[in-house]
Image (cartoon, rainbow, N blue to C red; front, side, top):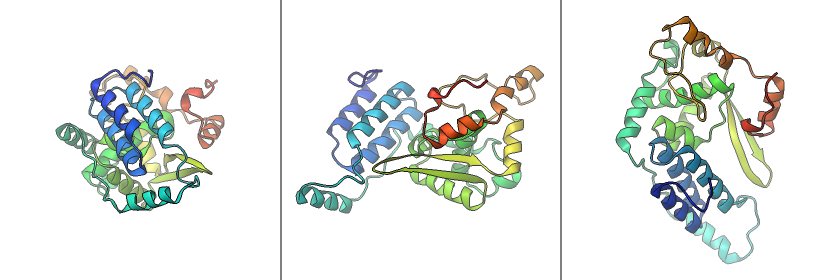
Length: 254
């Protein structure tokens, strides 16, 4: 999709806001708006990805770049004193329903479920769905929050708690002088890995089409249709993930 032309009025409005944004706080707020709008069905996935690319281009490597004039430094200092606006979902009811549906799903074993709240279980349902079908979750925090129907802070708190309980492994990927790559999230709990391998997930991974499952034991053929997604990832794919190479550029598994 061309960045100059979006395919919906909502995407056009976000694009105009990105073009006029001039602070880190505004860019961060718009990033959350993009993926919440996608999660609520206001904009399409292609629009969301194109808007995120435009936002990254406009934001640039400002964290480690040197500031030229003292006036710019003063402006950045004063911008930190302004309270950050709390982002809100365009459709709060849809977000709440999505959170309850995912939070009530059986994506976690009973012994692990009791450690998390409904919102945290919704976040883990999104992460588990990505890991089940791709071997690792590399979605940005804002996108996880939009899909789970929660806020960005809830995702961060969930990741901290799951790592503390040694249920998840989180690999950070900083880049010198540039924006860090998204974290790589893996399940390290043997009980949880075995659990999601046996049954379907509540979250449908981004960019793929899977048959709708009414019952995990509906038929032997339906169960076998997921066998390809349970294969462990190869060493070449792990190396590609560490180097930040997008999945669409990976070579075909042999």
